[in-house]
Image (cartoon, rainbow, N blue to C red; front, side, top):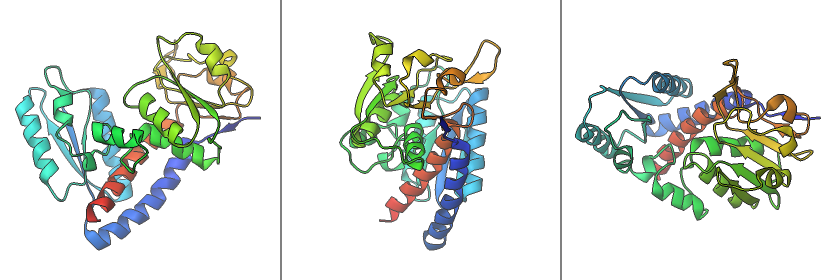
Length: 282
């Protein structure tokens, strides 16, 4: 019998506690400021930004939204980020990706100080994570760890497989699992014998962006299956990287799509903004 890890419910519970923590911080030190920068008219990005601003309102974090036109120059973008980096009232800076063609995101993101990098993407934060040091952790993998914690799923000594090696999910996910004393294998498009590797795993995290890629014959009985994917199936219906209906019968724990990892990502962004603010007053 499998257990569904409800990311939506967990995210809501975390936000209730976070709201209390943010209120206490605000009373003592003033508002927590999160700057969100959106360049251009990308519809998906506009939705993401709206959701982030809404989450700020829910948790009591003060959002500062900067909407820049499509024809913004690299210099204009960099000047804005630099001014936000120097602003004492801004504790976190988030640049919504992808940027319009012609803008260098790597150059822009380098201007965000690591202590304000609430996305947890910069080299310093990734490096600190690799070394097991205190840092701001990429929101999606951090959310996955909170989901595993919520069910008291043991990781120490367990075999974990992460499918996907992106800088946003796969790599930081593998580091977090390693730091939790799991034995981690990272698989990707060049991996041979993927099925055999997955069949040995106690925990499988799928983060490759391919609809229903992970099938029941790849999962061992009783494995924990975490689905980070967000895709559309052949009928245009939202689905993950895991063939949920068939895999759930073999899993001990599984995350749904939607309502699994997704809601946790934005919650962890709010959490990171709070952590960044508390560290700034230390």
